[in-house]
Length: 446
Ligand SMILES: [Zn+2]
Image (cartoon, rainbow, N blue to C red):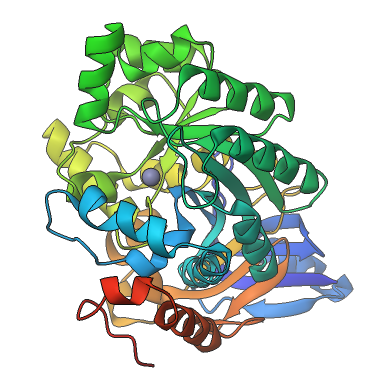
């Protein structure tokens, strides 16, 4: 079926940075076939056999990419906020007690709905029981990478990291030929996995050419441990054991030396920048200017809902611009067009998916998001990039397509019901041990 979205400001994010105003994007089934100025479409209008959708002067952008999150953690959102040791007090005990396959499935479905409603079309997830997550993301219609997390000490799904590795490899095989879903092994971090586990995960991921992602240079204890035990930085350590390469997506990269940045560039590794999560946890601000200067593929991640609370990239865009302007003491640094790049084409490049998604141009998958400009906060619009970064919020997301399929229409999920998704999750949360941990912390009634 051929569809054309007309009368929108089309922000293509192609190499030339073309913006068509007013413009159109045409796609046939899952593939974009044409994009351009309205006047060019009108020339051909007589021959058009297509479904026309009025963009109503909204801003049409490529679907946004969330490079780092843990979708199974929706039930933990808001727990341990403003608390010094959230990880040990809340998260680890609750995960061990309450997390099971069904909760991962229901939470991931919720997170996918939340992200789609906010215009995120591609996500790199890492968590446990990732087969359930992959199933949920597929059913919701997202483009996703399901990263099976592995830890030395074991987790809620597998006590033995070897079992988690082989579960991860089977999951990769299961999704090898899927049009939207890929799986990978996502070791937890540089100090929570032994070098043997890291190397084996990297060997498996690289052999299937899927991303190898892990938490890197994020925690104070991580920095101290590697300095004491190996006299190395996390990035230097990953390189020393041979797991830093073009498939490596290092999440966070807050504590970096100039040499670390050079190494990332040299090895063609990419970075998931999680500004909201990092600053909320008072961990610091990653040196993104240095990454951009070296043209390292750096995109945006929300981190899990228990870390950064939101799962939308529009919020990260504004935080990224604000914090880095402040950090560099330069109001002109990190211009809005660069931030939109990080949220779209650079994010896609960080996952090796820039040949498929991340820009609106012929041949790419029809992953698109229409941001309406009728709401009070979206008036007036002089520059679409600045409206996206400084004015827009997820409530402005009008319509979302993934692989040409309309998943959000009129600000509501089209093929799923968010109320039903929420009710199922609430119901599950009431019937697990986990319930007692959240007493008086969260409103559970529908
Ligand atoms: Zn994380």
